[in-house]
Length: 393
Image (cartoon, rainbow, N blue to C red):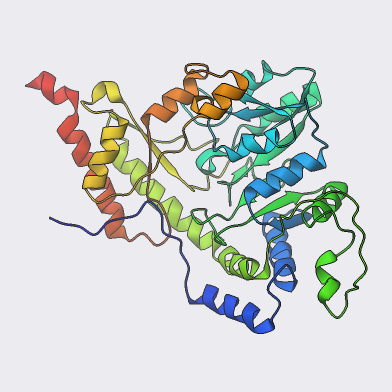
């Protein structure tokens, strides 16, 4: 039977977002302006942080965070190998070295103990990445921070709205970067935000995100603004425009509803797959923490199956199910291998997770019928390819 294709992700946008864009277009103010300021204020209130600075990507937010702590050439930043390249690439842009770390055994997030063994006199910061929306063990990270007096910059691209021990991600560390990319839990198409409780960091990031210009440079074409400005530093061009911020405000108002739907889908997946020894459900984090369920990363146990992860994905594709892989560990990519001498098998836990992982569709607009189709397709592939059937025969 031919089914319609279920994509890996589809953004949940509607007439409210169109209306918000229309209002900005009608206002004739398209770049950074009142809609961006409104979005920042709403996001700060939602998270419970003092400052939220909207930018054009989570990568930009990480860049501003590293700038705020004064990262310099020759410095080192601890970064998990199991992450997207943006987490480490921003470190290289400062002439600093990303020091890769392994994942926790049986999971995806950074292993703080492994990170601790890699700290040197040049280590300036650690960058925990909350993979899939599962909060990292921030208690273990904070122990390293206190012992070695290093900074924490959280990569929370997946972690809205997640929490660790009752505290929202975005309020725990001095600097946290969120993403609003097209596939994220809320989206502006492209975009991100940097949160901080530190006034000096906020002021520095505000200046550096718009060419290093003094004051509220975005107002210089407004009636209340001034044509005069001063360039205080060689800044960047990382600001968010009002068109995207307007979408962000609408999406943020739906964030809790989106989360509840993703949580429901994750619960259905977990219940359906826990009965199969050939499958391994994703970790949920500490009992007093909240997973955002940006991703549902299922892992197979290839030793119990007659096919590997790649073939499993192809079988799902034939069933009309879109998937992805999060992530190919950084040490396996040519750039990091060539530049820093990393090699296969350097980070066994990260490689184990990568070799077995499949990210299944999980987004608010998925119908119950589509969720059931994904479950049935996964189960059918396991039934047809389990080694236990061969033994029984």
